[in-house]
Image (tube, rainbow, N blue to C red; front, side):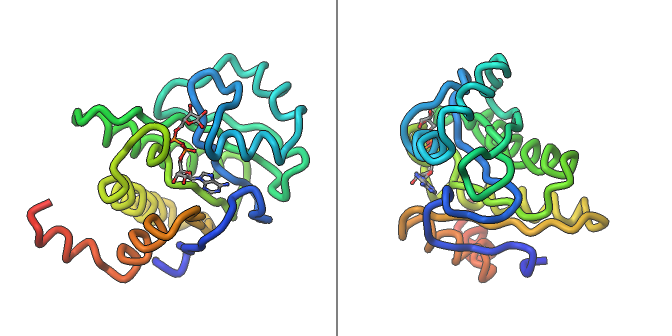
Length: 179
Ligand code: APR
């Protein structure tokens, strides 16, 4: 199953697959972080299309064209602002699940995710990465009939190392730590 998951270091705006996922906010009208980078790279037509979507709820996902990006589509999802409550995990899992379901509905077969909520939204990276990784594994197992390749595009070393640890089966060690 892991062969369908790739872990790379780099800038998601350069991903040349079918779709990239944007860690947006509920307005869908742009922002900083990866949201800002995607809007800058896609051009102003992306914002014009986003304005027609009437925002997006936390945990949900909406799709637009990619415009000047390499990728054909952008799937915008809104991660939870970290609060320490149990709902954080539920919303973060929903971001990955709903983005992948929307990708399947649009015949997307190669998709790249940033580490949603681990920047401005303050989700501790060592918690967010296993949630992301496990949800993608679960989705791929539940959608064996659909050819999907998922890339985690890591913008910094810390995130990259955390995902690489997961890919090497590191979570079993983690679970040993009572998490
Ligand atoms: N490519 C890949 N990953 C990136 C890039 C990039 N070009 N730029 C930033 N990242 C990474 C960050 O290092 C972090 O690991 O994306 C992850 C998510 O960080 P943020 O972009 O800050 O997103 P998030 O924490 O979900 O906060 C969302 O920030 O930018 C605003 O409008 C956005 O209000 C929303 C909030």
